[in-house]
Image (tube, rainbow, N blue to C red; front, side, top):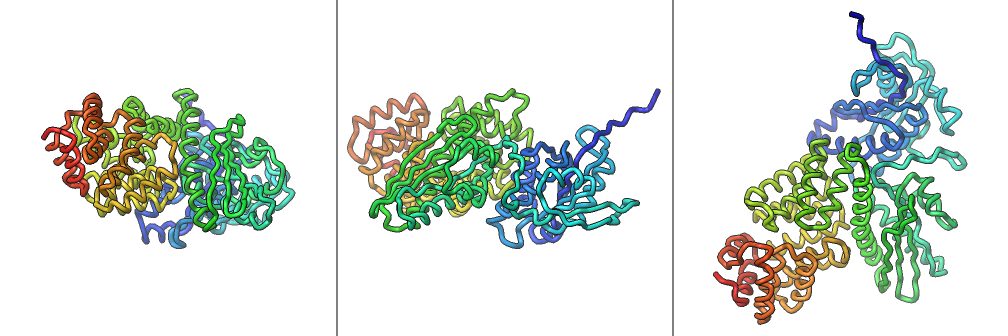
Length: 586
């Protein structure tokens, strides 16, 4: 029998390695691993996929990526190095990850999904010659790209490298982290599979040059805030501001920048009043996904900027999730990756209902089987189970909360910088009565994403459970103001009303609690709070109507059960007192 034929092909190979990996691991092993996973997913994998590459091997401190084109390989490597400063922006100097990158073009041996041979070996050797943040390429790669990409190179001559018996011609890409010089015509970036957005400079319609600073400030703040959404690829400020003052076509801009979504807006000031208008556009279809205007008194410029930034980001995030979920759902089932499964689940979770919760859990378990280290999948599954348990959609509540906590902890372990993971874990701790730890986790979620409206409501929930009613009222009020119309709005009003009830501000609580029941009639807890509030206000007839309605969605209501369930929480007494006044049996 003849020997099995060896499968070979020509490939451009990118080898990327973390600078000072051993030192970073010695200083902070768990944190370094979490940051490395995040960088692989959000920078390396995203940029490789955007330029037609695939990661075929990961090592402890690096990756190997295959491309069919040397031009794509170099373009992707430059994009990776340019993306790293923004990815590292919130880290200390000692935590930041830097890469050396080497690129070669050569014959490779194919074994399954893995590649071997001289093409891989040379790329690894080129990488060792690159400075931190730099890129070195072999001579044959240079021959392929020098007349296609208008990029400057430094000729390093022939280099003798380890384990290769002949010198290799080497070129260094000059300043890969710097934007290309004016006049260079680069190929339009490929639209990534994951969400991408450009925030165009807001237009100053006031006619006064001094208002430019405010329009620019709003734009920059929104870019910064959106960049905290790590599932979203955001074009840097310097790129989008090159369009300032120009008549533009949104579709053309999106094509030039390689993004699917564009956010644009305007600012108009008149006296001490200012109007900010924003709109979110799917540039591929021209569809307007969201538009809103905000009128504010311009008493404190920076306060207004912060408020508008948080409101805009909190409002458009659910719209992006919904649109991405619809896109993922339209793909053939076998082609959906972990991200596609998660974004579909997010669209279902946003609808809050029982059937959607069950479907979301199934998608998230599938996502975790595809990518066990995907923090957001664990976090969302923890949230879905926690919510299902809260709504009595599971047979055993103790086990439900325990499952939710396990997935939330897994999410935090996979990525401590994922705000959904920190929020869900914080809610699990709060439910267990561990108030100080819960508040710390929930504050961490908001530090990671100040525009996280659901996270802000969760923080308010934990505050009121710990007895900090005034702070809870303030926090939950911010959440309502940040995102008054999203699908979680019924939860926001419910927890705001509960905080007001805890503070014995019953008349103020009542309209919020009525709205919460109207928005989400499947959750018996909303009814409980409304019934208690009616009891305190002497609205006994209305309370009895809600008791009857509640019996259709939850277990029988008894004071003894509520005392047991709420015994760990500061608002237990005022809550049960109102129920008793409303006629709820012991």
